[in-house]
Every structure is written in C-alpha cells, then in structure tokens.
Image 1 (tube, rainbow, N blue to C red):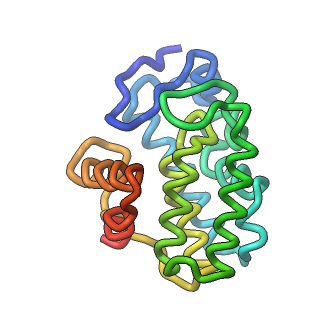
Image 2 (cartoon, rainbow, N blue to C red):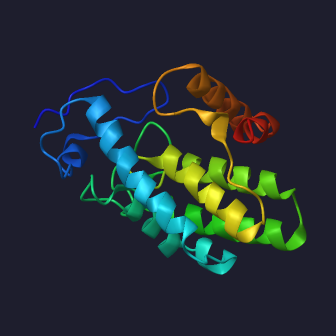
Length: 198
C-alpha cells in the first residue's frame, strides 16, 4: 500500500498497522485521503444536525466513539476505536478511558455549576479531548465537531466557525489555530475561544 506522505505541522503520524486499516486501497496521497475523510465527516455533520442529542448522551464514552466512527467509517477500519499505541501527543493509550471519563465528568460539572460561559465550556472540552488523543487519526476534527455538537445541542449556542477555513491543510488559519492551542496548553484558553468564533 502506498500511504507514504509527510504529515502537516501538528498532525500525528500513523503507525504502519494503522495505515493498513485504510478501506480504500487506491488512496496514495495526503490530498486524496483528506478529501475522502472530508466527505465522510460531512455525513457525520449532517447526521448530528438531524438528531436530538442531549447532554447526557453527548457526555458519554459511547457517544465519543460513535461520533468518531460516523466521521471515519468509510475510510478507516478502526474508526470509533480507541488507539492501541502511544503517540507524540496524548495520554498513554491504556489510560484513555479514565482520562476521558474525568473529562466528561468535568464538563458535566462545568455546565451544572456555570463554571465557565457556554462557549468556553465547549472549547475547553475540545481542547482537553484532543489532548487525550483518543484515536489514531482525526482527533482535531473530532474535537471540533464534538464541541460544535455540545454547543448547539446542550448549551444553546451556534456552531463554531473555527477560522472559517480548512484547518487540515497548512496555511494561515491552521497556524492561528495551532498558536491558540499552544496558548491553551499553557493555561490561557482565551485565544482558542476567540479563534473558535472567528
């Protein structure tokens, strides 16, 4: 199989056995893969808009996995399954369920107690879930879509615009997003909240 290409800044490389999970064997370039994944993600976005999703459902491990599966099930065999290898980012893979449960409980607490404004709750959720890095691929896109779903279905907010450009390809929007992520990593969430609404 010919999946040999450079990863963009901030992207996590796939292991060889993860690459073997590609369902469309004719894909050989990053551009072809990105296009196929984007089509699959659009189906997941449409699915999420047509569903009545409440907070108790969204804030579960099963929903986190289901959303990833719906985003990537036409591309990867392992869509919706937690990664089984360590990466250059994220918790050690055996710790994913515990770290995710702590996050889901924290988000429920933030909502119940009004700890942060609604946009900040959703963006903090996105930032923490991507830092756990539950899946082998697609964590950034998954984190943004699940934040959109939480914002729109549970917090009565519109979907975020996330810079109004693709964050998959190198460019100004991706650089601004990664800069905001790094600020959030250092404890300053404000630039990421601002970017999410830009």
